[in-house]
Image 1: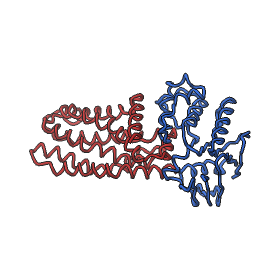
Image 2: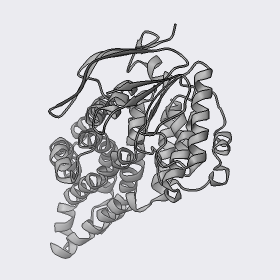
Image 3: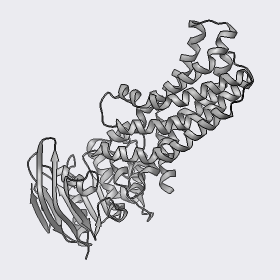
Image 4: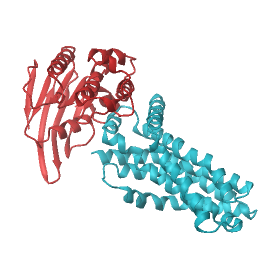
Length: 221
Length: 200
């Protein structure tokens, strides 16, 4: 457990000393969303209709944008090699790295989402549901993304490959999350969607660190 | 008796077979220098010994523990071509994390290790600001901290100055006098005692 804490603190420290690494995806999130009212229509009704979808798609893309860096630097300078040969559990270290990734992208996105929701004229209840879906699903985005990132570590110019690997796995999350928010706008029950998101979170939490560890070991051979 | 036993190892990279049916044993106190031309598989051999990549066939054991087992992995310290330092962290943090990964639970002082290699004043210097030789020294400082019995050093003398080479040689000698093992690759001639050479 000590190595989990050490790795988490190390990753957070490194990110805070090089803020552009995690600020870029967040900036992308804010800018992309704020362009929609300009491009489509500033009308309240239209925007509140497309709002949940826009916020969710942009959230997904900005997480995707940040995934490339998840293992890249540690691979380049050889720290990843040392992690693989360490007597401690590689999965635990990877879980720490994934936690750090979520704290630096998922969490800020959740915190920014009410602001973005208001910009797209979502009502308070929808914003509340939006935040709930983000809270349930952004950890899954980081966890599933880690599998993709560990598979492409060491491959040059792999951004496109990463999207191809990861996006199909993100689709179910996107469908359940956006349908939860838009159903809530019509006062329909959304517990089904939330349960699905929670299930996806649990499954990815249980499998992702192990699968990523195996993929990383294969990539480093 | 704790011996490192390498049995029938073979390794292939791309279409080329680098070595095959490689077997040797190493007892405590011995230093093995792996020599060979560029591309003869020195680094690949060290990576197999470190447990990073499995060979095509064969196995490696120390104290009957195979590579990949927790006992084996805590017995080795591997230093590759890459510095294993993160530019955003300062020397002390880097060294602290590196030795932590290696299983340093003894609380041995990283500060002392940095002083030993003459980088005391660089404790809070970011690794990004160090020269190639200094980076090497910081990583080698981990040797003062680690409890590992087997040192696997890939070209450890690269980028070091004359003083640095001498003190590293002393360090290796002391380690082996205390019952440690060391396997290293180098193109330089070395005056280490108890040195065996394995040509690939």
